[in-house]
Length: 357
Length: 267
Image 1 (cartoon, rainbow over the protein chains, first blue to last red):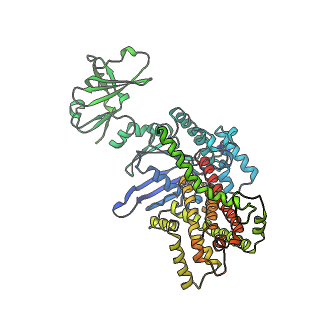
Image 2 (image 1 turned 180 degrees about the vertical axis):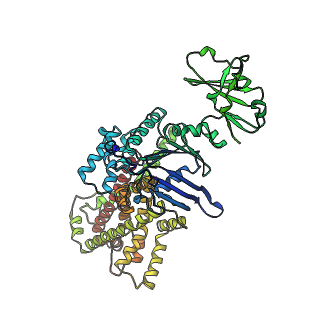
Image 3 (image 1 turned 90 degrees about the horizontal axis):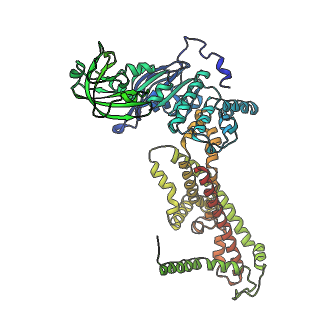
């Protein structure tokens, strides 16, 4: 089903209203002195067929936004529009939006197939048709043989895929995913990330995924929306957010950041203010090597080496202060890796210095 | 914990003594209901089913059993409906005064029966026009509801609330969600609660005394009244055995049910 209908274009009209439009959304929990503002005046447009991740630490408001889109929470102020239709105040069952929950929320008293049939059953689809469509959805997530099992008999990854099949079987216009891979181990998570991306591409359904895992956000999304403290810090494509973070928070939260603080920046960079340089942008060489023309150089001592398989992270304490991580690719020249305590010279291009204000 | 040899023996003897003290009289009642001697001479002179057939033919016993069953069924039905609604409200919703309401719902089981009885009696006779069959049923429902609320609330707390959200999210109205998701999860607990409520109502005597309309005699009331009439005592024995069976069986079933469903949901 998912694949079959994928061919039909979902964006028939490029001038159409966005799949999701949030206008001035504010959410306050509690009241009086105990009131907590979870979301501050949020404006966000998500286009049809887009894969967006909401990235942020826990308590940053990203899950609240997701629940407001689903209809589980009512915004204190602002409006929610789905394809131009104002659904603020509309119950979740009247919204063309489905959610994949963090704990999957599979109905324990129904078989896997009955779980997947559920939205079709609600929509009063005939018995044979809903069985066929459920089986098709289960085939897409490669769980056809598990159809008659109970959810409790499945592994975490399989439950995850059942939840996905159940949420996609009646083709909602938007799928919301609340930390869907959080409970899976690393290998499975990486595999599921690829599957999710594949399913999203083939189905053309708008995906909005909440995560606190920056790797996941970078891997999956067409666009990343970085949340902090109830506000959007930055929204943009993965490489934009990573290479050009709009704020110190984004620089620190997305990727490893090497902070060059204001007290050492003049000495190291010859500039005022706070800066960050990504570890993989820094070259490491012998202490007497030449710094390439136009590059910034700094000398220091290797204080720590962390071997992680494909890469080695090398922490260098600069003579001028500050400590920078350098990422070395373990490409077969292990001998060239410095040793702890060795003197080294670091260099990078000034373009890679990210101003943090 | 490791106990010394003598300590273990003392504890064993104590345990046996306590259990004997509790169950020997019950066993005696059971044996005497089959004892051929009308004066219950010991050892029993022979086995007879006379008392059982006499009890079955006794108009007083029959109408008392019937009344007890009616009252227990009705009180249980009221308790299941109201108790289910109450536990949904108490567990799934937050509202002002929730803890107070929760306490007030559960309090009747802790209140001395005589207090509940007198209070209800005053209310019924002075404000609502006297005691009837209905007041008896309502009186029983006040404590029956506690068992339903306790069982249903415990199950609701264990049942993931996101299941209900997921159902709503997939297009189900609140009523459909109740029908297809919440109720199936709650069913075992409701049956267990209903069985316990039935058992409690069936052998209740204190509140019954204060709320039963004139001429209404439940089985426990009948037993109490006939207990000291020597010529009735063989039948009283039979009635007592019947009462024990009808009260203990639901409790056993409820225990089995909640045990089974507990493992099913935590598996």
